[in-house]
Length: 246
Image (cartoon, rainbow, N blue to C red; front, side, top):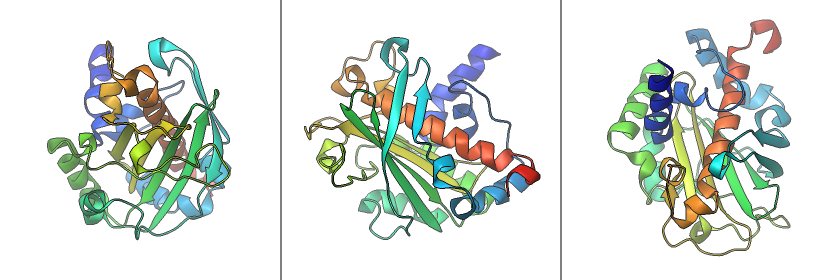
């Protein structure tokens, strides 16, 4: 059963459709969300402190290449906003069926300040059926793997991410959650501004034996690791007892 669960995490969670699998990644497990938790999650963007949604430091035990430990430090938080001009045209079109209530973004750098990762939480207008339909479509059509559907980075001036533009995107994750009205995404690149000629989705860049630049540099592990931990924190808040989630 454990082997089946692990395959489910890698095969579905990172394609963008199966949120539950990614909860198991990292040091703790998040309980499955209920219908009540789905609706509670809808309001987290305005009733949770930014340091809870985007912790200042993320720890990734065995989350790097070769099972190395990884750590990411938050260097910028974007003002919360709507979704106008937040995504490239094709990704915006792919996400349009779920709508947009609010978009939250933050950018992290690794402990060596050699890579940067922008992570986003798109709070949608969709109900559970709408999120499930969108998740099925992302999985069936492989939308989370398409290099023409990469998320945009948040390149904050005066930070290590200042040169993190569209051509610097190296690896990414897009996940349509089914137990919360949220799309979680992350995109990673280098701090020195070098372009990545062949971006690679995180599930491929973290595969055993992968030899591409995004794989060997750890960009896939960054995108996947940061997305995992932000998603897990969000769902932990949504599934917390009501007295702790006010």
